[in-house]
Length: 76
Image 1 (cartoon, rainbow, N blue to C red):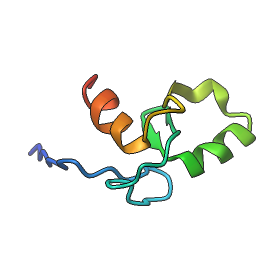
Image 2 (image 1 turned 120 degrees about the horizontal axis):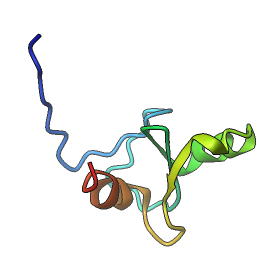
Image 3 (image 1 turned 90 degrees about the horizontal axis):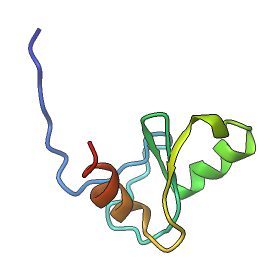
Image 4 (image 1 turned 45 degrees about the horizontal axis):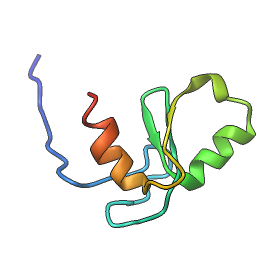
């Protein structure tokens, strides 16, 4: 099996809605299983009682894009 690695650079895309958050300063969001979920989509996850699948939450003061780049990607 051939393995392909793609360097996404600074790009940040919500894994649910595919919205580009690369240059956004909007705060919030969460890690749902292994998916980075933007602030808007995270509201629907909390609404439907799926809290047991939430692995991490973006701090209220930190932009989602910075959290994905500097926290989530740094830990993987």
